[in-house]
Amino acid sequence: MTHVLERRYRRLLRAYPKDYRAAHGEELISTLMEAARPEDRRPSLRETRHLLAGAFTVRVRATRAAGVPPWTDGLHLGALIVAMLTFAQLPVLPYFDYKVWTALGIVLMVALVRGWMRVAALLAAFAAVWTSWPIVWGGFYVPALDLGPLYGDLAPVAPYWVVAAASAVLAIRRAGAGRASGRARGWGATMPARSPRWLLVPLAGWALQLTQVPVYEPVWVVSRTGVEVVALLLVLAATLDARDGRWALAAAVYLLPGLVYLAENLLVTGVRGFLYWSVLTALVVASLVAARRVHARA
Image (tube, rainbow, N blue to C red; front, top):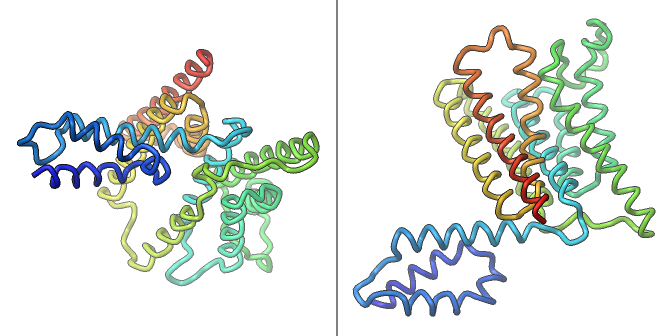
């Protein structure tokens, strides 16, 4: 049954990048088959765990772009995640409200994915100023300019300001790098922030609105909490494996609007709310501490 075991090993190796499999796949298969016992028909749990952990490490380290500081990648990825989730939760469907605002959000998200940071900075700044209109002008409203949502609290507008600030910093940094080298520097094509798959996030959120499923039901809240905790645990692992702080910085950027919400609603936040934000904050802080330590050792 050696062919059955080999087939299952090869299935596990699909977790590795294609280039890595081409360079080391056969060597790994040979080593694993030589160490296997004749009666083995499936990889052991220990082998499975080690292979998947190795694939995770290889993929994480492959995202490091040469010549690009880790903080730019982390800031870019964090801003993109905040933008995607913010626009994904807007009440755009099923009645297709805020047509202009939806178009602005799509262009902004495409600009972030493509690395057009000047465009992203301008659009995000406009979105931040517009949503903050009631706060800045004390409720003064212009009905003729009903482009998008307006908020009177800090928490809903915080994501737009985070994206605007991050995009502005990246745009300035890129312009400076371009002047120093005579041309604009690359932003690392392997970094996850450059993947167009991110655009599926708002599309999925808007499609969910068509079902009219109440997303604030307990099952959805618990599911989101579980996804966030798992994602932040992976961030901590990625920080240790990649030995840089880009993942931790991205997580901190993602958490920032949530901390603004917590600060604004501190008096009405219950025990479960405090526990939720405490766990997320602890994981992000642990990732930042790990990033600082691995950077100090480098």
